[in-house]
Structure formats: C-alpha cells, structure tokens
Length: 413
Image (cartoon, rainbow, N blue to C red; front, side, top):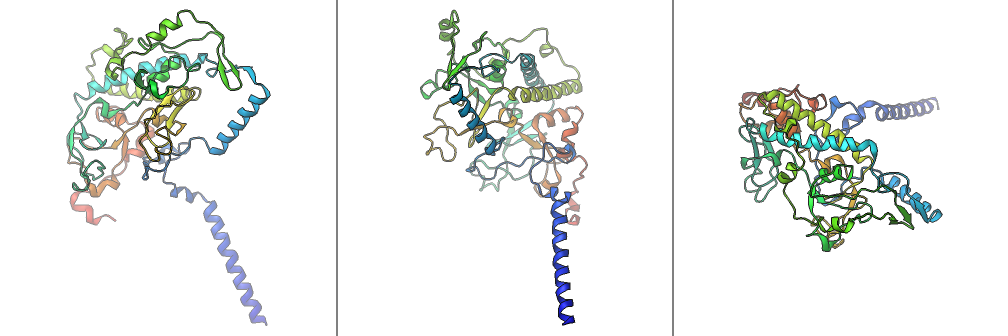
C-alpha cells in the first residue's frame, strides 16, 4: 500500500511539474520569436522584411478587426433610425475640409515632387536594374543571382531574373485611382464612367481631397456642412458656376510626368542644381519620410479603400463600381472589387529590394540569401548615394551580418 501511494504521489508531481513548465513557456517572452511578421508597435531594432502573401487567392488581412467593423455598422444603423434627418458635424464626412490637415496635404504634395525630382537625378549616378518578366528591382551595377522570378516561363530559367535598365517608376510606384470632383455628393464612379473619369495617382487624389488645388483637377469646396437623410447625403448649398466646372472635369488622362509639372514653383529646391550627391540623397530620404508621415496623418481622417484581392485603390468615402477586377473570385462579384480599408503600403508601394554592401562587388548569390537584408527601394538608393542609414531600417538591412565568402559556405552552419 505504501508503495502504491508513493507511486501515485510521484505521478501527480510529474504532471504538476509538466504543467508548470508549459505555463511558464507560453507566458514567457520567448514566444515572440515565433512571429513571422514584424510588430510595428515593438522594438524597431528587431523588425524584419514583411513577407508577401504566398496564396494570392486569399483575401488581404483587415487592418481593423471584423468585430470592430460590425460594431461600427450597428452603431451607424441605430443612429440612422434614431435621427433620420441630421446635420453631419464632423469633417470630412460633412463635405468640409479638416483645417489642421490642409498644411499637411501641401507638405505631402511638395515632398512627392521632391522625391521624384531627386530620384531622377540620383539615377544618373546609381544604376537600377529591373527584371524583364516580373516586378523585381535591384540597386547596383549588375543584377543579383537570387532565384525569385515569378514571371512567364520562369520555370525554364530556374526562376533566374533577366535584367534590364530601370527607371524612376521602378524605384517608387504610386497606384492610380479615379478623381472625384464632389467626394460627398457623388462619391462613386460607375462602370459607364470608367473612360470619362480621369485617373491620377492615389496620393495626389488624397492631397486634392485634403485641400490641395491642382490645375485641371478641380474639386468642390463647400462652406456649409451637408445633411444625412436616412443615409443619403443631401446638399442644400447652391454653388454658382458648378455646371461649368463639371463640363471641364472630364479631361483626358495624363501621365505622372505631366501631373508633376503642375503647380511647380520655379524658385523651389526642385529646380535647383544639386552638386553634392550626399546632400541630394539626404534631402530625398527626408522627403520620403515626410511624405510617409503626412500620408499616415491624412489617412486617419480621409478614407482610402483597396481591393481585398488586387492592388486597386480608391480615395473617397466609398469604392468605385467599375467592373475591372480580374483577381481571385472575381466571377462571383461580376468583376466588382471587394473593397476594404487600405494601409499605407497600398497607397505608396515600398517595393523592397535586396541590400548591397558594395556596389562594385560580386553579385548577390542565391545560396547566401539568408544573410542578405532588404529595404525599400527609395531608402536603398539614397543609402547607396551616401545618405545615412535610417535607424528603423538597420535591422531590416542586416548591417551587422557578414556574408561568408565563396570558399566559406560549407563551413557555415
């Protein structure tokens, strides 16, 4: 009997010890090492490259949890029932501008112009390569040897890239959206207006809706808030000459280069001769961070939408109704986009590239890719031109990692 009771106590103690170890392990900070995606709220020194979606058929993750979206929809529905006719008080939902964001929009607009001008000058000194069959970009004299090509017939080439000379559009990409003359009164572009409504870069449309006036792209500016009657926006304000402006609204679509020429100040830094390459790269990098920070502030108030399956974006209270989606499950939606809340990466594509320690050194090897870091193409180009490395990208670029030589690969664990 004593032996049985002793064995029973030993088994109970072992189970208790096992449970305590499991509780300690899952409650400790060691579990953070299993996160595959970076934590924006954590320590920036431990940030890594965001991994793209492996399955394109899956929808993009929602920035706001679905429970929170359902809660907001229920609150809006209850408010609509309790007050069928109400005056919208808060901008920009009532058609008015947000006063504190007008200056931010102008700074973002100027920073974008400085970035495009600085990149065009930096490309005269720092070469940029782009794959002929996919969207891969590389900063350096020769392209890398990392096999990540996903273009046509990439299997026959063992996923090897075929490089050609790149340009400014390969370093930074601004997706386009439809321009809205009246973001509150007519917040959607229907399918029949897809050829008449102009398409401009989404970041430019965001600046226009936030208070920037751009020639050939007018926007209706209200002085009185609008009303919401059973969910429909009603505007009792009469604007003189509105019909005249609407006739001049649907102009021919222009390229990014033509949009950049609009409203340029001849006395600004944009047209000055930059003799110092380091100063030019530093100023371009500062403009990049100013633009990103300003866009984040504007997106807190002004809605920006993206398709959950394709890169299409739309700035405004709602997404457009043009049936142009060709991504996964578009047949069930009759070509309409599956709109959801957009993030900063949807509005300004970061386009991550491999970091090169020496532009004149040998190309990056495929078997050593785990030792290489990455950075946005704009940051990599400015750093290679002499700008200091930003603190938030030091870990991502893996500056503290020394890749082994060709004869040392077999000796590395």
